[in-house]
Amino acid sequence: MFKINENYLKLPGSYLFSTIGKKVNAYCAANPEKKVIRLGIGDVTQPLAPAIVEAMHMAVDEMGKAETFRGYAPDLGYEFLRETIAENDYRARGCDISADEIFVSDGAKCDCGNIQEIFSLENRIAVCDPVYPVYVDSNVMAGRTGTYDRDRETWSDVIYMPCTAENEFVPALPREGEKPDLIYLCFPNNPTGAVVTKVQLQEWVDYANRTGSVILYDAAYEAYITEEDIPHSIYECEGARACAIEFRSFSKNAGFTGVRLGFTVIPKELKCGEVSLHSLWARRHGTKYNGAPYIIQRAGEAVYSEAGKAQLKAQIAYYQRNAAYIFDGLKDMGYTVSGGVNSPYIWLKTPGGMTSWEFFDCLLEQVNVVGTPGSGFGPSGEGYFRLTAFGSYENTVEAVDRMKTIPL
Ligand code: MLT
Image (cartoon, rainbow, N blue to C red; front, side, top):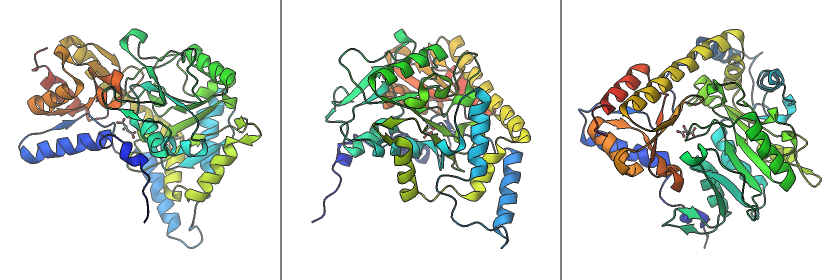
């Protein structure tokens, strides 16, 4: 008789955004006359920029002619895209990353979830609390997290690094005695929108090099950084090539949530003894993945064209205006708010001591606005709530106006 991977049975409930989706769909089915505004999942709403659409059209035409048709893509990504990324995202910022250290994929979520496969089950992970659920859940599935404490909503073998108002949502380095092997960091942070300065990030890089741990750095939201001295890549820090893997996405900077494209950077210096993590990931990628589609990789290349850059700057500014509108609007109403300045996420304290899910229900039922309950990201998220700036401007304004009718 076959057996299943019982680790899956340990997972409490369904994936956060599936749970929210089901709740909202049920509400909409029961109340078809209500216009629900969705500011929950960080899904973009603006159409693809013209430079990207044009590149895709051209690539489709190429695929339709025998002389330019392409079959399987190279499993690690086309050279034209990897070179363009290395030049624009790294060398232009003074980071020493070469094209062959970039692995193109169909998105950062898959890479963040899959990366743990190349590490031993004996490794101990450390995560921020609250945290993007994929990091923890993928380790639960692998069997690396121990047992679940339903009351505390924590795993016995995971090191949680609380991110609270007291530390401005930036985690402290692990305490004496806590020995993480794999440290997941995400800045600008999902869900809190917090950022670290280059000096703060350097401390993490130094810590990882000192203790022999690896930082799994999710930089999916770097395009939203507006302030100086906030690093866009961990490789801006000295020594990061020896201890860090970086994940990047085209979803939030270019609206590719439905197109699917991302990449992971693994410097060749990152080694466990004599074994390079680069070669392990290349082996894994080559075995389990057939490369992102040619048309999509050409679309990715267009993100870095002159026209693409200008159009996407305007698109990001559009969402940043939404973020500022939500941030200022909530502040004026008397909410305690953070994030939103270098991030498309606004993190607010729930009013009147409501739990995160109570506030979710209140917003959905009273003003038909959907957000994400902070507790869905971890125990330290309880009492908080996340709104996204990825809606249309009109919906954003309306959502904030509707929230004004809720007494604080
Ligand atoms: C989020 O809402 O946290 C993100 O959209 C999820 C994701 O990027 O997978």
